[in-house]
Amino acid sequence: MSFRTRLSALLPAGAGLAALLAGGLTPAAAADSAQAPAAKAVFTNRVANFNVCNPCRWQGSHVAKIVDQVIKYRPQVIALEEICVGETRSLRNALAQRGYRYHVAHGSVDNTPRNCFGYGSSYGNAILSAAPLTNKVNHPYGNGGSEPRGYVAADTTVAGKKVRVFATHLAQAGQARARASQIDELGRATASRKDIIVLGDFNADPKYSEMQPLWRGTQAWAGFEDADPACGPAQNRPPCQPTANASPYRKKFDYVLLPKSGLLTAPSLGVHDTFSDHDLVHADLQVR
Image 1 (cartoon, rainbow, N blue to C red):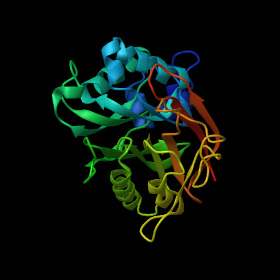
Image 2: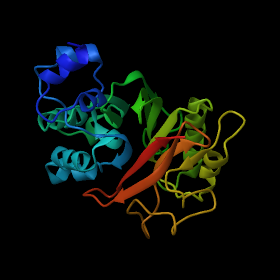
Image 3: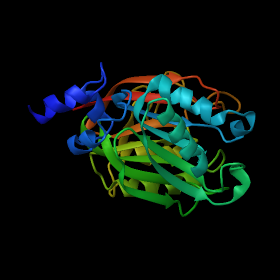
């Protein structure tokens, strides 16, 4: 009897080998985990971004609300902004209790307790991935603006391809100069690679001046395109879909960015209303 046949015999009814391996288990690890329930399936080509709203933490059941959103859309990878380390761990554990196994990379930019009552004191960005995360980097920006900002990056698998994912949060409104500096740091970190996915809350509409180098690129790094084809250097709302509640009207702040002529394309996009002041944005990717 082959390994595949033996392993299939051990799996619970209806849980195929492909679904088990999609959760990031190698054949050897799958054999070791054969007695454990199989992870529930996610969309292995789906990536998402979600600013989970720091003030919303005081409304109660914040982790449960995030869990509901993750399970509703079941992304392979999701980037989260305005989240604490302790909260991320609680989120991972709560998802596991409901059958969804995610690996975590956290990018702390603020180690004061002001944003994390009840969840420790490390606050920033996070990446959750159904496949393992390796080569993790946490990078605070040199100029954070009025409060610390940064990105977290890690290698993982999306749509069957090895990619490097960045999750970032740029400076707040009225701080274009700080955002310009942050975009330059972020762009340089991509080193013109084609296997990059950038997810985040940029606090900037596509036409803002600080966003222009992001679209066209520089000598140091290649330009990006948004998963929403209606968003770009000369396009604001509409037809570019707004994603955040901002004064005096809703704005496009949340992005799924891919390098031009990169490894992956985004043929479909979803923008979803949530409990947060930001929408959850997801893109289903395919290999070029």
